[in-house]
Amino acid sequence: MKGGGQDMTFFEVYDRWLNKHKAEIKQSTVATYYSLGNTFTRIIDSDADICSLDADVMKACLERFRDTGASNHYIADLIRVFRMVMRYAGEDLGISNLPSIDWKIKDVVTARVKDATRQRVKRFTIAEYERMIKTFEDHPTPGRLAVVVTMFTGIRVGEACGLKFSDIDFDEGVIHIQRTCVSIGKAIQKMLRPNEEYVMSRCLQSPKSASSDRYIPMIPKLRKILQSYAKVYPGDYFVATLSAEPTCTRTLRIWYGQMLKAANVPYLNYHCLRHTFATQMIEKGVDVKTVSSILGHAGVEITMDTYCHPSDDVKRAGIQKAFKGLLK
View 1 (cartoon, rainbow, N blue to C red):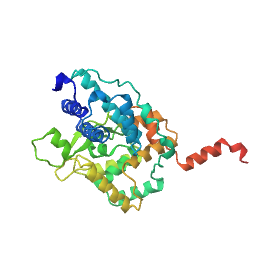
View 2 (cartoon, rainbow, N blue to C red; view 1 turned 180 degrees about the horizontal axis):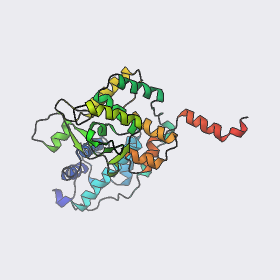
View 3 (cartoon, one colour; view 1 turned 30 degrees about the horizontal axis):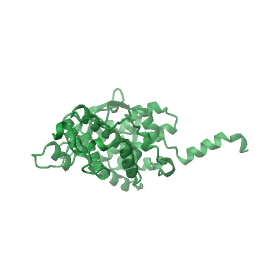
View 4 (cartoon, one colour; view 1 turned 90 degrees about the vertical axis):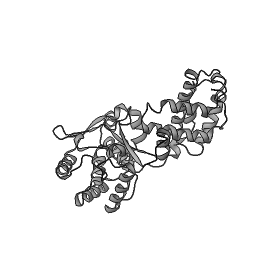
């Protein structure tokens, strides 16, 4: 260790921090930290002394990166990880003279007028949902079944890949979301198991957060579909490989795209199913706290900021309702 912990670059500390914690955290989190580490190489000089990265320097770096189009959410992730690394430098490595990390995330992320430039978030219509259901009923497959479940539960794509028929309680009418499927990339496997030859793999782990382990009620339509399918499908996982392992998220997304094409529905990414589910519920008067619980969010703020985007029809109806007496 240099100078008893002094005169270390940020990236020397970052590598030590990640190596210490990678065995204690989910592999998907390791992948996230690895990716964020690569991003830091774009905004911080490779030989930058960790003690030189004070608030002014980091804000300037992050603002320049923000101006390249990075989202506020991603910048907030960078700041949170930066703080963890700085705390590790002081508490574990004994580096003194570290700059303060008390500056606020909002000092950087709110400087961007994001609402004015936010793209319209797309979602499916009810008519498109009906065509997708008919496509499944005409030719039911495991992949299409996972898509239908996502349509009526709002689960994440990894949760759909990790779903088992044993997670369904038909008596209670609920689905237990208790695992997610994560693909292990080459770089991550090399970090976790450097002496092993790379083989494209996936792993099952607990959901994204404690609140993501949840029970989701089934509407009668979904319950009927699952009961019929469970009688004839021999496997355990909804979507599985020939070796009975859970299918990776990339494969499910491919099957999803094929389903949309068969249903003559314009392509939207898989996450739009979750967005459609949440927005549809809120527009029909379901309180945000309930929607947040079903989605597995840690708090209603995430639900409000990410998924509550009323359609033009809802906005129009709201304006007409507000000025009803003046429009006669």
